[in-house]
Length: 288
Image (cartoon, rainbow, N blue to C red):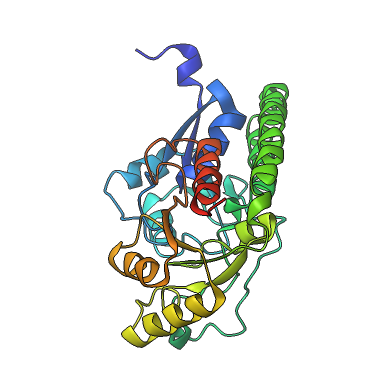
């Protein structure tokens, strides 16, 4: 039988593992957090499982990345959950992107441009400074839901932000040798990261968002990378290795497998662990 403290926990469903980890750090023992994703999925296409519906039906709080990141799976799950507390626009629907200015807002949402995000690029959590905004949004929602625990939530928030701030200083110092370094990736996951750490995004292996590369696109990318001496090819674990590996081999670049959310590769179970891994892998990819 569950004890009184466990029974009183706030039941949180998070869409992805990054916002799940941030919620656990703010909520502490007062929350029970379930993530729909495990970390290895495409953030835009987490496979729907029957067990998601009862989880959402019982949830006190729903925490999501926002900017349309979960558009392919969340609306149908919310409708099926029949939980009025967590529907769009309700206080328990926690959009962590609130207060963030998006990058890459498209001029057109025509399907010929691929799987574009009408609200802008949703991968802002790969910028650890913007993760602080998400932490605050989560804290605000928890305080609104359970004001009797405000002191604990604020203490947890402050403790986590202090740890995150210390990490950011270390990451920025470690990334100094990569100022101006160019890289390509499979999908457009990295504009916020590149902007934060002074790297230069040189394009994507995808022809357009959600559209696989053509042989001609691959040839053009290889030629451009050779001309510009681009040293890094990033492959996210959600995508096959064959084409990124070919491009790296043809250009002499280093192929780096980087997670886009916690759990994407081994030993990245938390947000801080994931960012540590990304920084170490990139720094190690460029010859000294």
